[in-house]
Length: 334
Length: 256
Image 1 (cartoon, each protein chain N blue to C red):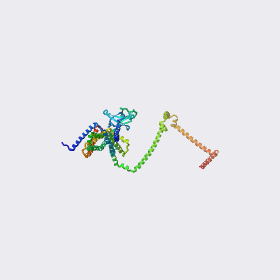
Image 2 (cartoon, rainbow over the protein chains, first blue to last red):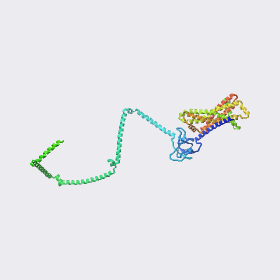
Image 3 (tube, one colour):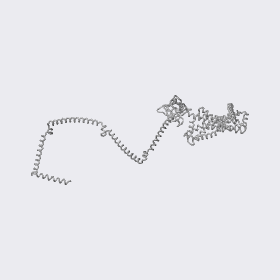
Image 4 (tube, rainbow over the protein chains, first blue to last red):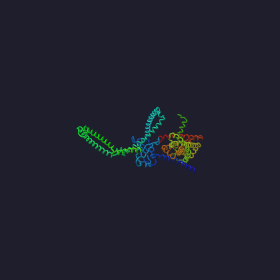
């Protein structure tokens, strides 16, 4: 009997273990499908369901928060996807979250990705409608890829042509094979660098100059920026104008004077006429000058006679001796 | 029209098996119930088969994992190994391998036991002593196999999944947590329930076929051996046929 009880015990353990495993399995599967615990249903509208089916996972920022409960066609362009969201997570998901259809891995099952939205929102509640974010469909990617592919094929064909042309070109190969070219190029580059350095310098100086001009320094600066100069210039111009006016009146007067002289000359009156035109006056002047010449010659003779006079002879000799002595001294002291 | 002998025998046997099954249902609902013998049979059929089923399951899990790995690496989805192994074990390998081992061990033992009882006229003696031999021998055994095989399948699955976990870890490192998360993430009720339900049918078929072959054993020791042998063969065949039917039915319900 004791043996039988032990056997029954073993059988009991065996059976319970088996049923326990079944229960655990079913529970874990059920938990994955959110059959236990409380959930709330939220919705999102899409134009294209992209193959989402009930049971697909819903993730919020990559964390499993629920499953798709149903996919309904609302009208010809709108599809409503209902999602069961675990109540524990639902307090963290805000109404401004975006729903996007994604894929698990590259070729895996479809999933709904909930992404945190911008701005502020309140935690989601039963029946809330989330905004849908349009994602790129794989078909669209492939379509774009096919265009890219065509372009690439055209490009590569043209590239082949270009390369062929380059290969056939002798001039290019000559340039490429020329060893001196590199040295020349280097020298040119050096020159260019120097030139550019100089240009740089020049530009910086010009810069300084412009700055100076802007600051109103120097003639150009004053010319362009000094406001007092303009006033002064204006005053100067006014004065110049006045001077010109004066000159004009002066010339008018001069003109009158000259016309008077002219008249005098023509009529034979006045001193000018006497000087310029009267020949008798010229003769008189001539006679006077001849007289003066004669009298100075006579004076000269008188003076020479005076030198030889005994009263003045000693003085002239003394003068002569002093003159000789001075010239000898100047020779002695070089 | 005279059918060939083999065909006639086959159809005859099918008819007899159907009668036998019908009799089982009739007898099983009628009191009195042989509870003690049923529990004893459960112990023999269920508990004592566990080591064999466990070892087979463990090896199957390990081998399946190691065999699948190269193909999955070819497709670059090595990370899907636990999911793949989990689904194949729970859906198909677990129930069928366990049922086949069970058919080999229990089918043959029931066939031989009842066959030798029949040959040594113990069954007749039982009838004389007032015990219903069909109730005492057949109903208890069939009930025991029907109820114990699902439990064996479940435990076999568990051990098999553990073997697969070791298999995954031979060439890679996966934590047990990640492993079972991946396995159960990819399982659904549609995988577990049909497999669980069909194992009842497997157990029932194995019990019925074993009992039928033993109960209708021909005379002589040769008959015992033949009934034990044919019990295993027919039971194993029945397992596969039932598996075929089960997959069709599952498909019909859209659970695949």
